[in-house]
Amino acid sequence: MTAYRGTAGDDSGRGRIVLAATPIGNMGDATERLIGLLQSADVVAAEDTRRLHRLVQALGVTVAGRVISYHEHNEAERTSELLDLVRDGATLLMVTDAGMPSVSDPGYRLVEAAVAEGLDLTAVPGASAVLAALALSGLPTDRFCFEGFLPRKPGVRAGRLADLAAERRTMVFFEAPHRLEPMLRSLQQAFGSERPAAVARELTKVHEQVIRGSLLELLQWAQATEVRGEIAVVVAGAPEAAPSRPEDHVADVNALIEGGMRLKDAVAAVSAETRVSKRELYAAVIAAR
Image 1 (cartoon, rainbow, N blue to C red):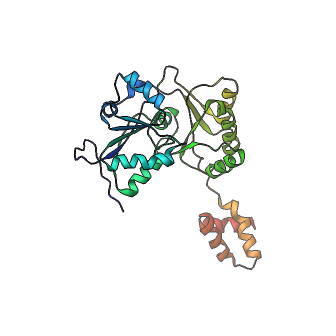
Image 2: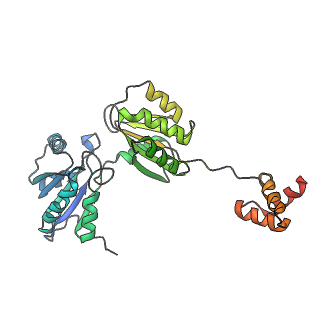
Image 3: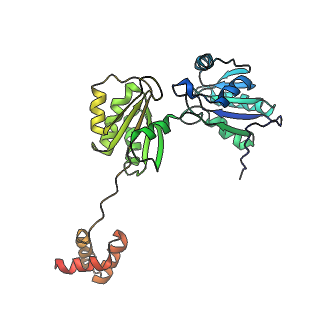
């Protein structure tokens, strides 16, 4: 068991890692803490240094610390280098192109290693495409899950969606615009044409758009539209199954009786499995004779 050590405003001289959310489109969503850290951190690890440069230009600030590229293709080897800097007392700011590091973006490997070693770690919350899309979708928000990008290979994707077919929580996915149509087709095949969903694109930007409807309607929209921009897809969870009636299980009881079980025991067994009232099931069996 490891204890969480918050380090916001820490002046102990210990090194620390700060995961900071960056705007997902609108630069006005940059927090004061993010701006301060960009100017003061000893090291800034960025998913794309060119995007970082555009960010600080838009914010009108200057990065004083060392900038290091940290992305999915080099994080395995760069993680140890970054941890060395933190051990030596550096404040390391981790940013990605948009949103919170390690959430469908680089950063998890660094966090995992830092936690294992007991290094100081904290986060600066901010804009979130997941929460913005969920809130705007018009779908239930009390319980949800984030599924990120679906696998590209059709067989693997079909298997993942089969696992999610009975998921009761609202689901949030990411997808690239040029793959949105086949993704929606896969969702329709796995979840049914009438499952409610929403496509959110260009969230917080000038051309923000949220299209709501059934999966079939959204697929038809995508087929007729040249979709551009960052995409989040929100899908309603599986509906509750209609409660079964005692009459639906009379045949199950009779099958057990034909196998040598007493009526009373057969009713009890089927009732325990289906959660149908024993009294009502017994009455249905007698009525059917």
